[in-house]
Image 1 (tube, rainbow, N blue to C red):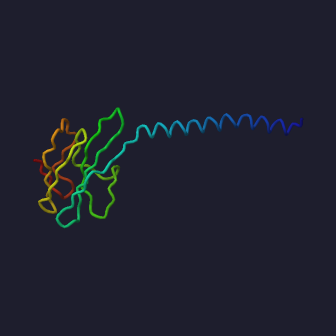
Image 2 (cartoon, helix red, strand yellow):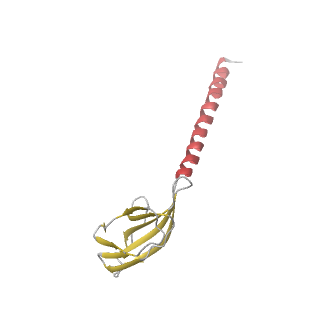
Length: 134
């Protein structure tokens, strides 16, 4: 066999394990990132009196190691809700019903949430909107 053919076979023999290792790392990384990903399920949206803002209520589920939560955010009408970029003003443990009533464009009431055993976040303001809890 010629020297050129031997070099080609050796190069191919070395490339196969390198490529296989790379594919393995990519597959493992993909599986691990999916295991840690959260699922966000939109429950309700409550429009302000003029319809220019929405209180969006979602359930966030992140798997067995992180407790599920109910979260609420305010989004301007026409904007897309995104759990990564829309800040929450309310976050409580578990799947709960949130009662929302707008008093005006700058004030919203959040009704008593039955069964909330742990409150993670409960802001009094979200942007220019005052939030009152009952």
